Each structure stands twice: as C-alpha cells, then as structure tokens.
Image (cartoon, rainbow, N blue to C red; front, side, top):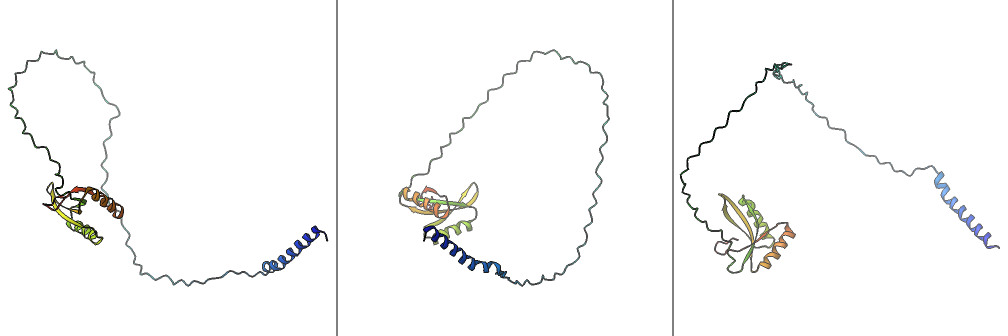
Length: 199
C-alpha cells in the first residue's frame, strides 16, 4: 500500500474513535453541576421602638443690616498746605550710662570621657517611670543588661532607659545597631558614669 493512503486511514480511524468517545458525553444532556443547599437562619426579630421626631430648633432671627445710601455726598476738598519746617533743637547730651560688663559664664564642659572606658546605650527618655521600667524589663527578659535612671530636666522628672555598660565604644556601637535591627529602637551611645550609674 501507498504510504499516504496508510496515513489517511490511520487519521480516519483516530477521528472515528474520538467521535465515539466524546459525542455521547456531549449529547447526553446531563449536567454534572452540583447543587449545594445552604440553610440560612431567619433574621432575628428586633424590638423596634418608635423614635420621637426631632423638632427643628428655633433660631433667633438674623439681625438686619441697614442699607447703605446709594450715593455719597462729597464736600469740596480744600488743599492743605504743609507747615514750614522748623529747625530741630539739638538734643541735650545724655548722661553717660555705666554699663556693667557681664560676668563671663563658664562654657559648658563636654561630658568627661569614661574613666574605665565603659559605654552605655541610651534607648529612651520617658516622662512615665512605668513605661521606662516596662521597656527595661522587656529588654532584660531578652537577655540585655538594661536599667533605668531618673533625672530632672528643665524641672520635669524623666526616666531614662540604658543598656550596658560595655567595655569599648565599638562594642556599644555594635549593640546599638543590633538593638535597632531587632527592636527598632534607635539608641545613643554615651559614656558610662560609674559614680551615678548613668550615662
């Protein structure tokens, strides 16, 4: 047999088999849809109380503005002559005021460097001691050496939260960066004052 004839016969057989398989599915008319029944409870009965209608408030009548006259009466304008300037008298010499030289105020001294080379991270200043203690307690439960210190700034009592002390500024900077990454707290590295226990 010719090769082309074989291919045509095989193609026709494949089409007949496909038609035998798929035509009954298409013509059967059965829908394979699933119907789901959902039970919805009835809406609860609400006790509805009638609402009294709101009466509009009586506003006092708006004050009326007197009408402006439509035309303004104008009187003739007389020119005004400027008076001749008189020479000013020389002012009397003022007594020399003695100005006291202000006493020189000492320049604020920067914080002394840490004696032991210890550094702490100041994480915050709180007006509420309870909030400061809460943050300190949270940090301690996470393994950080945290503590609080109360100070007065401009007459207001505030409580500062510190973590440390650490032996070197580099270690304090690393811990500050770690706290910022893990907790989102932006800290400030300050020298540790061992005498007062604060930065």
